Image (cartoon, rainbow, N blue to C red):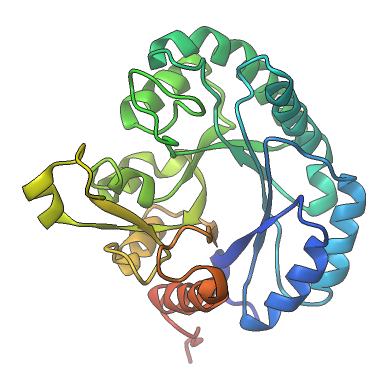
Length: 298
């Protein structure tokens, strides 16, 4: 039976460089995940066709997709590990078809320690080429809206963390297949209201991460945002401040389809031995926020 609810799937991220990603996927699928996003940090050291085959075998007949692959690092700089990140992007673009993926996601990269504007020439050079490489294979490229502790004036990893920066980078490389891997968390960390962004930017949102935040307004009022007291925590969906009913409703109103993949390993409470407890709670919460069990019309 066709399930229109799954126009927006709920899944999770998996570590592509882990010793046995396929075994991990096989162990978590009974919880009801509908998609997985294999991702790599700075270096991609896997035989990708083999990894794809192993993951497909682990998924078996389950209705689970791998629509997005992740490569996180700084492909704009020129140290050895940065060059490895760029090679990782190229490899994922060239091998996405083995996974059935349509989107490759990660950070833009950044000229380290410089204002965002000073990264634009290198951004244009690298991403014009990558966008064409991806477009030739029918793929989209999505930038996570994560500052990685950077700001407008300086940073190490990413320039796509602010709506003003989005305007700049989309103008710098006006390719239809360049967009966002969006989540509310990274906007809330900078006290930006995330919900109105969906209405404006939905056509550029190619993938969504399931990550939330808890803002401690009492800390802000007493200590500000640059004091010793932590004023915001990254949270798993269902534990933070965001009403994901509203997020999913806005996405649906915009005609959006795709997967919301939970980005774990950040929640300060549901971590370590409680990691999967938190992720499964988020999975079920997001499914409920999607409307619960699909009921066909009579």
